[in-house]
Image (tube, rainbow, N blue to C red; front, side):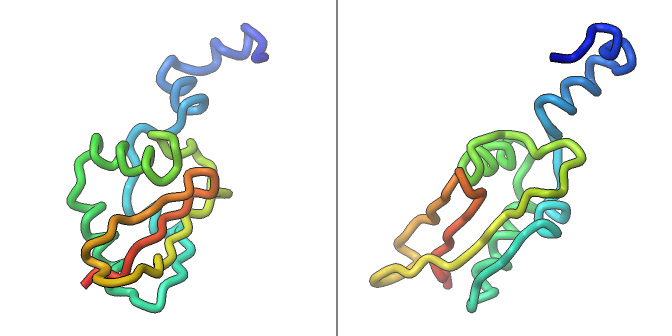
Length: 112
């Protein structure tokens, strides 16, 4: 797909980043691309706090859960990370979050 002559313009690391995405990303960059639909901002605040405490491998697993991929796109700002509240019966602390990987969405219970 890419002419061989064009590949010499990039290092192996640059090609990997362009094809596979960013291996390391910041929570602030994700937060800047987030659409939060939540009446209870406290649970969403917990999300950002927990993500900041995660190491790179844990953030990779988080992305796999919510998006089905382990890396953020390189230089692409067209994606939107959607966070909304999941309506559950009973104690929300007894429920796990749900994800819609096709739409890069996270449905959070209203954790206390």
